[in-house]
Length: 141
Image (cartoon, rainbow, N blue to C red; front, side):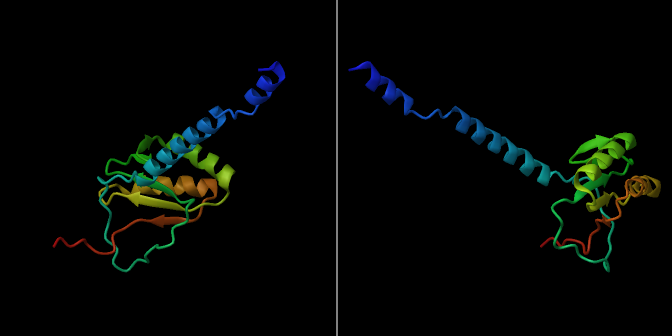
């Protein structure tokens, strides 16, 4: 086979390495985001609020902040100090501007711990705060 025809046929092959890299990156991204979406601490017992409004169309930018009965602040299951929480909220505020915060406070948590989260949000200029509560008790049938 002449040399020039051989070089032409080899040049027509497509390198699949970049495409495979992109596919793996997408898979990792979806696995991480799905896991983050499902991380709600089930040890937190919410207070009952029969007459509160039901939040149906939750903004996808909503940050869920949990405060357990010991007063620990957590986001996506990671416990944070107040200073670390402040830094995270400041960085998110710079990146997104105004965004809603859903506070899931344990009914056994002290008010001062929940108030601390509210104060940090107020210092950052975040004013869209909601509180999670139970509308009605689940019935076991």
